[in-house]
Length: 573
Ligand SMILES: [Zn+2]
Image (cartoon, rainbow, N blue to C red):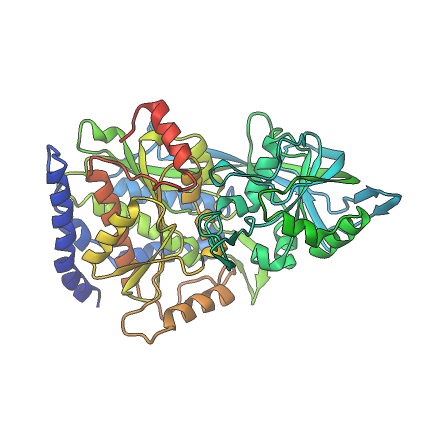
């Protein structure tokens, strides 16, 4: 089956190559890129399955950062890169980038109180609120005035400012989750497509943004009001995600620029809180969806002391390099990322305590290794250099990729694109491919060209309101301005009835996602991994051979950051 796939594909892929060649001639490059045929034909589902089998085996203990599983994993990845002929990716001559993580466990006996207007509320930890600090300190205490700040958003490109110059330094902000839901003036039943992406979630809607903005404005703390429909998940998810040990990167200032208090309160708790303050939460919520909103002081003080247990973990990103063939362009980079970590050994489910993470993300690592091997099959390397970066601690909040983006081994202003692989399609070939973040950058056209060469179509994210673009490692790069390709599994499977693809997704999410049972299954069909890895190869190879780097389209949320970075580095297109 795999052999047949290769023959039938190589014909259509020749078209893709012709396109690349044409583009290069049109752009007048000196050395013509070598044909990708040998590289494309080298992709092997069996070899990738063997990688997945190794990485998801009991021996690798679920690949927890800092564990014996990490040692085995990073050794395996380095061995594979070395034996495939890839150079060490760190300029220090190694395949590793050290990433120090800090584990912070807040004492669950913490008490929080809201006092004022002659009353005191004492919400219960986990039932009514969760709270923590990312400061690396034994104790964090807050006793401060509270102020409701709407959605806590400052977005000049949408002429939006929830703060209106009000000084929130030293205060505890109370904010709503998600983007401000601004109605479309033409069609008030729908969201305005020109403000905060319409029904798609922008970064302003994510909880990480709320805490970052509050810290930037000098607030002491920030509490987010949970609403199931607007957050996209029930209170239990909030409770379980923030009640145990939390990992973060440790900055030289011990994260003292972060908030002294971060947290969520349940919607019911928020109701009581606003009633105590003599404020109408429903009215304020409605007002927060308009540009006229002004922060509302609550006349209450929030009081909490958080005691932490701390530990540090030495973890690693693994990085390999293929040096480009163009004397000028070889100092710019195409990056492929796939996180190697998973949850290690954890709570037992159905008699298994090892979180194997076969799909999430042994499969992405296998694709990364196979793409690296394929690049070595090219007669001449592409013009730009290629980095193969397997990052740690994605499951703990994209930490390894954030570390790389904040401490890049090569300048981000010369990083043309990040192509991220997180969870490959193990159910066979598709007629389509989903592109998360479609419409944001000139990568749209490159991906469409490569997909067309495979006889496939590109579809946008079927769930834009879920904010998928912000949930895997490419986002760490985009946040620093680098355009990113985040491919997702197609849903239109060849030889399967309509709806079958979505049913497989639903089954995986319900039964295996982030559970010990995410293992290799007997019904896997690796031809889909081959097809998608070939697409990722084609897109990266194309970017690496073109004169110009991909660009954000006007209005894209990370365009300003990129433009500034390119300007200051003098590396604009
Ligand atoms: Zn995961």
